[in-house]
Length: 242
Image 1 (tube, rainbow, N blue to C red):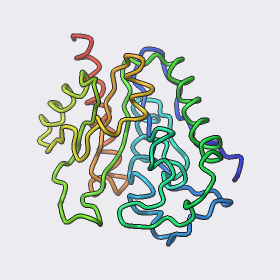
Image 2 (image 1 turned 120 degrees about the vertical axis):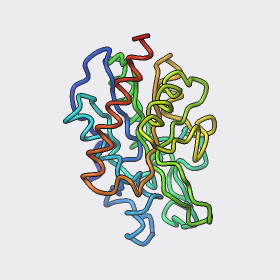
Image 3 (image 1 turned 90 degrees about the horizontal axis):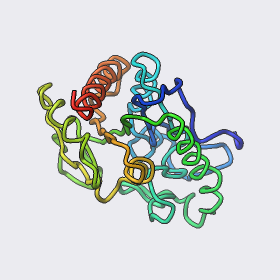
Image 4 (image 1 turned 90 degrees about the vertical axis):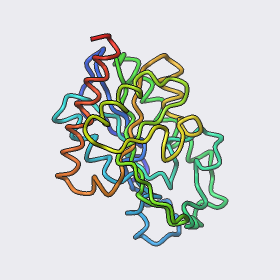
């Protein structure tokens, strides 16, 4: 639908508590946008952060952590990129050409998707005054363009503010998990949403990346939602000095 919002919000934030943001939770492509790709690729990591929608929904509905969730594919407009980033309307991704984006109207995509998403997120966060933001992402075990396997089961990304990440790295490690510290890519290079809505306002945050082969089923998503909620709550307590 042309008029569909690029986000949905689940749960009502309680001021001063934890909230969740999921920028890449959807693989939806509006009917009037033709990407020119094999439809099977919409189930691939280039189109969606697999598993994150289910986890974000569970965080909101079962663990009291309201969520702001994207409802369009990152191939349509990457909401986790700055407006001037080359990948905001990708023409290729992990070796796959996205021909429908070549020469497409970027300004129209920004006005229709990116700006409303971030304006609504800013308003939502201003009202929530969160003690901690959980930015939820997932990563593929390996890229099509690389033979290198990614051994981390979960990772914490950050730019300048690592206050919360330091606690979460330790807490996930205590669960026996292999934890990435600014892996498989660095938050110092790609941290657009949290740079804008967290670091710019002094809000602590956790950008959590979970390996996609661990969260493909509803049962796995439920398990990780419980774990993420626990780590987030314990991190928030630690930040208070509790």
